[in-house]
Length: 279
Image 1: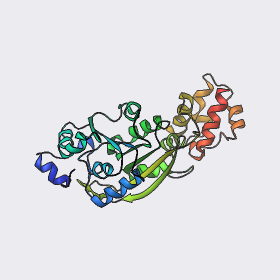
Image 2: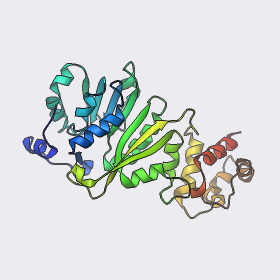
Image 3: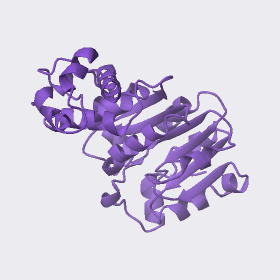
Image 4: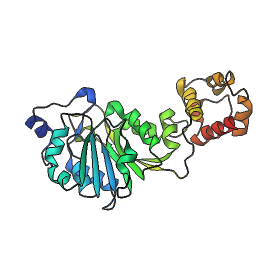
């Protein structure tokens, strides 16, 4: 297990952080341990770590979880992980995969493994949106996800209707998850230091979901936020030219005023509208 700092490891392997991968490595061991404790409150379960990097979070996760699967896309970092965690790999407690986390088959990774099934990681800044959307697709097969994300993204994911940061991402995530911003992580906790602070968020699947992300639900949300100043009657106008001419009637049954803007609608309101339009 690694005890070297990210700067030392990169130097030893004659590497530099790759800006095009959005690489910022956690370099605070106390913080890593605190995060791992939130990811794995008890000493059990299987954690799939997205973007393992140089193993700062992998180390304390291995101390708590029954099994860890570390996904890393950067082929230059994978040999470092395999060398630093050689004993854990040999004991079959850790698997290191060189894969793209956006397309990984998570269901297969979790199949037959100890529960709870948890996703965790320091999400690369440039891929946070796609990876959160991927997590939404996995809501039915995990017990929770604990991520480090940019503070701005954390605020968006946790925002409420009519909030400054409330948008399509807020709705898509909150349709399937209860989301909590746990604490802010200052930029100095990373190497190289990013220009913004981060935050730790916890996402726990809802049972049942507020709404499945059907094509219609997705279209309603995307149209409502595509031009935030548009009233819903204009934002959703394209729907009246398609298979749903009774837009006003469906809105009335959903308790939605078409003179409002999308930013004031709750996740439940979007879900009601999608349901009415499919009846």
